[in-house]
Image 1 (spheres, rainbow, N blue to C red):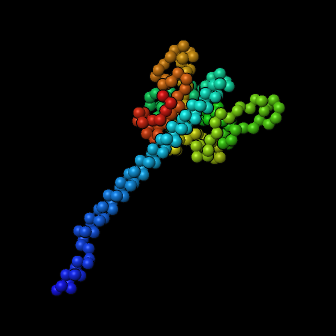
Image 2: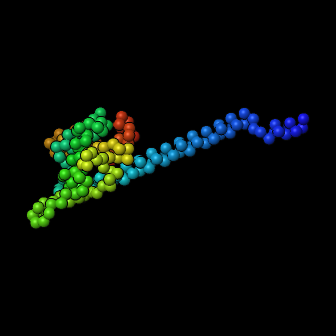
Image 3: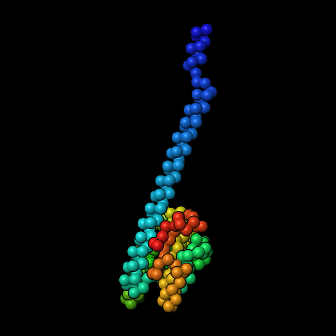
Length: 199
């Protein structure tokens, strides 16, 4: 009988195995939770850096041109309300693309600043105020469709409030800043308080 009881003690019971599996599952859950938090924090940090870069490039553009990057597309998109989180809307994407072209001088949207050649045409070429890595651009059929945040969504850019001020009718519902607004929805289109922005 003693031999039998020794054999019994050498093996694990079902309860002991269940406890070990439960502990391993708990540890895996904690590790995965920390990993997801770290990835989100990294994406938010990269987005903040990109927005700071956009702001610096817009300031350099203003220094050369006397105004911030602005056009019909950027004047048409507001940064307040429902449309501000509609990252796939035509107005949102057109504003993003217009901002990209103004910052890079890439009118043909091939991902590189356009070369104007020599002479008078070279003098008319727009300087590049910002360069992008391929991961920062969403390409479709070899052409830039929009500048993307680390979540793969378009950045928002609006000068709608600036247009209203220039027309003599300031409208705080058109935007947050009097110059320009740039933002990422941080993959939370309907939660404006979680967005990353320059306001």
